[in-house]
Length: 417
Image (cartoon, rainbow, N blue to C red; front, top):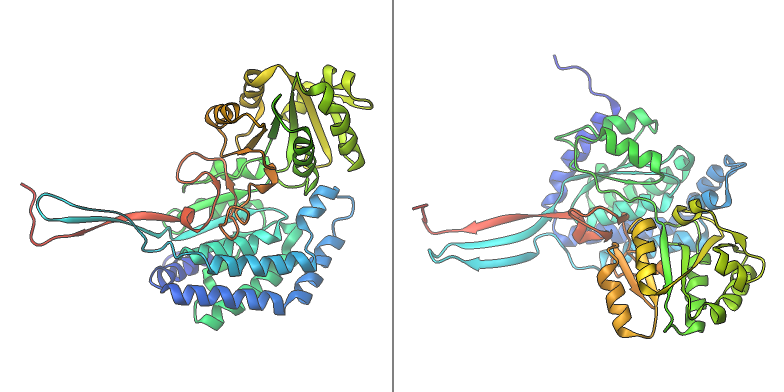
């Protein structure tokens, strides 16, 4: 008799069965399920908000940034439903032909997109990921195992109930989206070791969580690591545009990984730019920490330490450094960026092209806020994360990034000579 399966393994087995069903489910059925999920989220909005309030009530003493990542509001719930509808409206990636070639022997060779299978999503304090991951995985024909944080247990469960209602309405198995019954770290260790049941793990959270997954995984891992992002204000920048971009990138939602952490200011523009920029940041409630030149040019700036250049604040804190030109800005980014997103503000196309070419981050922006580095903003409907890995997918991950490929050969009796 085989030993009894653990709850984690049993859930993975059920997800594997659901993945086999999703792999052959037609586009119309997966699309119908997504639309039914969106409708269910809207209908259950009050219950979802009540569950989220229970989670928030248990977070006394946690930082404002932490609470913001966990908080759902009526507009945010509505946005989740809209995101699922946008995902449903995206072209079906499954079966898409990427390449067709006919060989001299008459054999036709095709390369097509197919689902990955079972994806494990491991995340913390972000209940929106429950919906985004389920929606994107379903669009790409995958089953997903969701391990949210203990701090979001009620929110995640309420959202999963809406997802399951939508799946049942469309006639798809609820095991296509599963929350792990256990939320301890031992459950994560077991989950990421289930080779043969889990095909890909995507961790999204703090450094400790990502390190845990990376250390114990026996299946491929796509990392969503921390974001130390930069905006370089070039000497050829429009100062008013630069101020708007920096303030938005820092203050729009500072608890996110694509929020700005360091502004680099080209020395020739610094005397004109820094006083109004620091004033605008302070008016928005931002604590500014600066290099000696920044402190000399702008009042009431705290001194920046070496640790500030590598800090992911996730809060209303910004470090500012004056640099001597594009070379020094790029060198600073190479030294401190986590390669998630970096931007330049400039009216000089040649300098912008050089920045884009030499800054090797998952997303590089010209004259735009780093807060725009997001699956929804990029037209993907949502994202399962912003991959900082280099293999398989990089940057905001949408449905295409949740597929792999296979080769299909059509022959008429060809043999290998």
